[in-house]
Image (cartoon, rainbow, N blue to C red; front, side, top):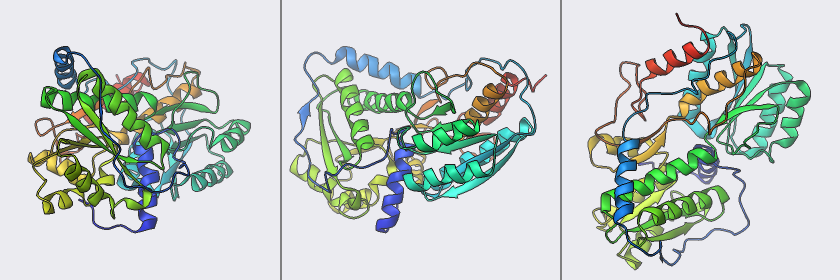
Length: 397
């Protein structure tokens, strides 16, 4: 797992992981830092037999790598060539952002476009400034992957609208009707709901809803992280009416510092906790080591979404447990598709119409990317993805 990280790095991780979390807005409230665990609550009453059955069906469904990657709605015509796209690349997203830029570049090459990367720190002010800098380059489109909300970017979006530059927003909650300059996006409300449902389904299936107590590693200062926990709570209630859910509350500055001990203390205070849930693997920096030091490593199972590299390695080796994840590097392909629709006057597609594939990552379906044909996180075939988008863009045959 990750080693100690500086306060500045932890702040960066939060901003970046809000994006990976497919959050709506990453601004924090003024509640301050905290490390208490809220009282556990029953997820509800009633029989869990039907819930377990439904959970097992859901687990079976999302354990199979996707075979369809596009909206299956061909463009009105082949995309025009010669377009120039600016990718605002947040440093806080690290390798994920780099991979998204790589895939954006590969997809753009297929349609005869060029891509220019514009690195930014990743917090909202830097993203706002990044959009303004991108507009000065007079691009044909801007791809942006951030957890910032539409409201936080409204001023810059208005500038893009005035300049008639389409914008693609990743990890931002978008309305059903996309207002120009927004032409598309992935990783918003729909993705968050599917991720949380997948996590809850695995917990219910794994435990048969028998004495379930899922404790969510919460960051009270961030509304998006809090909301994701609420989604997990509600999904768990659906599958395990008698299951328990509680929050292990932390502050931003606790990541990699007090958070590991907070998790240990919560389990020691309430030994019924048997699942630890997170919205991002990097939030749990130091947690596995702390659990082992306290002799609790075999008392709980850790799961969540957006696994860190160490989490994926644990899944691959069989030492870790499943994670519900998406392949965010595909965002580059979805962005080119959205821009192409705009340029060819083809109806746009929303996240709900064209959801990015979700996979419950397990040892059995984990696939390496050594031959360049597969993505590490999901195991879905990249070759098939390229084939489907090429057909949709009238580039094949």
